[in-house]
Length: 466
Ligand SMILES: *Cc1c(COP(=O)(O)O)cnc(C)c1O
Image 1: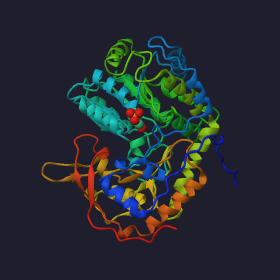
Image 2 (image 1 turned 30 degrees about the horizontal axis):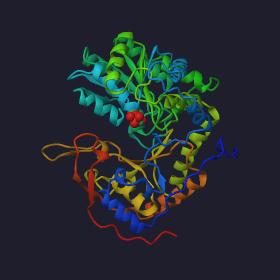
Image 3 (image 1 turned 120 degrees about the vertical axis):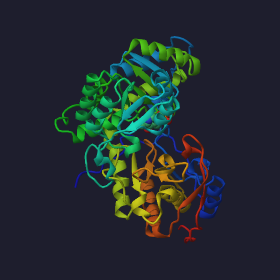
Image 4 (image 1 turned 135 degrees about the horizontal axis):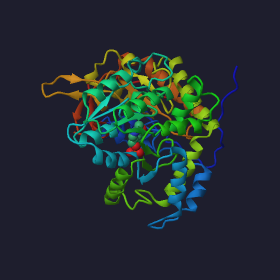
């Protein structure tokens, strides 16, 4: 038996968990319109809504924050942050933003025109929304194997290179840039291989299209490359990450993931002219280029966080804890997307609730029951997030109905995860009694954040928790 992988840190500060009863949770969920984003966090015991901005920072980060230099212009914290990012990515221009979507908004406002096409493996929801906001079309060209939740493929985040070539050919002159999301969040947190990134980079060069990484989880992706890709075992994760960035012309980055901070991000670019335009736009809405949307102390924490995310003991623990949750869920009859991703376990809600059709939101129904039964908050990634109802009433859902259990970094312990597995197993035992939902409020953009629902039928009461 291989030795237990343990947390390569100890706990210094603790925060109590909210312990609640089912009748209370029923009331709170109804008040929130059956949308878990509407809950007060105080009503949630295990918050797996997202790994974004929920990281526990290290003593190293907290102490770095104390040396933050809050000068309006030319802050020493900016230069420290910039040098860490430049050393990792090699990009010439580093533009701090308050989070990833601010980098996306600036990038696409400057590059996407009405009718343009932006291909990616899978666009994240804010990326897609920003591209569409500027009149572009966000195309998802992930390889077909990604659509099979049971396929044990090492790099299910890879893009389909034939589809990418066909897209670049068909839309010549209308592709302002191509992107790759590492790891592929909307596609199950699956990694992209170095080989695939090299081919995308070469194709983009051939068609003279800039290639940008959505690099939020670059360290988890680089770890999987080291573990799974032939010929990469002996390289450090940092060297692999550096090559990933070297293959691209720039990146958008949310520091709230592998940046290990609660707020922050950046846009990094090689193109001098585009970077100048981006800084001008930055000043309009984010702030002066040496702080962007951040306090200088945030930049200090991000500089330390990026370095900590590359620690291989940390990455081993991180991916082992996600795998532990996934394997535990499988063992109690909760089908998950295989193999487990880097930051989250994706439960296959369609497989668990085959009797609930896509237009009745099986993922949302399951996510709500996990909350009602166990106080677990998760995130639907299915028909609520990506489904579309046409004016004629026809409904198009995504190919997968998933519920994402995202693990915040360095936050929950193994016994927390053990309890979550027990609770999810109890929900799975009576999955066939769960009913779908009806959407009663359907906002125009990013509807999963604010949509409201009603249950289609009252769920049979369950015995109280012990
Ligand atoms: C979180 C995320 C973003 C957006 O970043 P924010 O900091 O939340 O604005 C973009 N892309 C991916 C893949 C993400 O996971």
